[in-house]
Length: 205
Length: 186
Picture 1 (cartoon, chains in turn yellow, blue):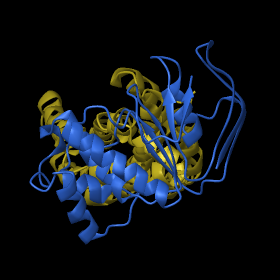
Picture 2: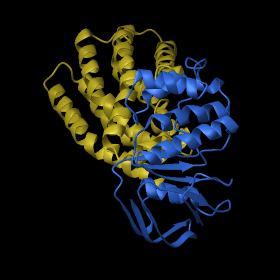
Picture 3: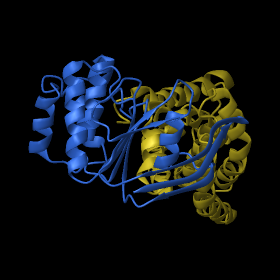
Picture 4: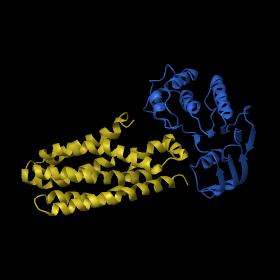
């Protein structure tokens, strides 16, 4: 079903590729400067690309009545929301992680740093997807701008930890930031999914 | 099967349902009537568990509930077949599904995407779900809307077959229906 709606997964990919291509054009082809900025460029581009997909997580189900059926079925809303968020992450964020590895070489990021980048994105993008889902759940009947303005500040800790981990890839601090990011993900899963359910329920009161 | 006691519901501080008391028994078909905005759809949503911020009590012994709302819960970007296969409400039975396609005249449309269908044809897709589902309680909001005479006869016979199986059915409709055991007016 997700694949039949190409805008939901192709939109973020196209946006990410365009954004990443524009940075070298804007900053010039200085290898050192690009390598220094690469972690921030890739993380910010992924964060912005992610914003394009969060409106698809629950909105369609709310509008077409599927959400009514899920609520009426008596089945676990937590499981349903978790699956929706995972599918959204799988189709919109996972391709971006692989693309970011490819584009990191375009930005002259060293291989070791690129591997740390991939690891931070594996830990960080599910957090972005869950915050995106929360924004989507809060703004089911409203526009995407409101959701985006809610979600960006909440994603900043993951963004900062991800960038710090990549920038400190040569020393041991990298593990500290990765553990923090992993802990952030671990605690985010139950809290953010439960928050999504609360936000969805608000629309039925 | 359902006992409603002193049920009240307000929407944006506007009292929509006030102090309702009624019971629905096993194998009963209830026709829920009322003018526009009287709260028929809201009552069905409360009985199905979609809305739960009401006052009063709703006691139900139904193990599972089939709900058909104004929005049919179908996916525009999927074909008729995939919409039905996606549905979690009935077990996939290929032979029964083929029979349902023919009965509801959807056999030539099974690979057609939903956005290419008329409102009546979409309604028939959701009625296939109704036809194939074996539930204790069916809550149907305007099931006869957008249907031709044959479609209406089909859904009437489907409802009666569910009643004969021991299920209870509550439906809303502005038209007079002969299949109901009793009418409830809001």
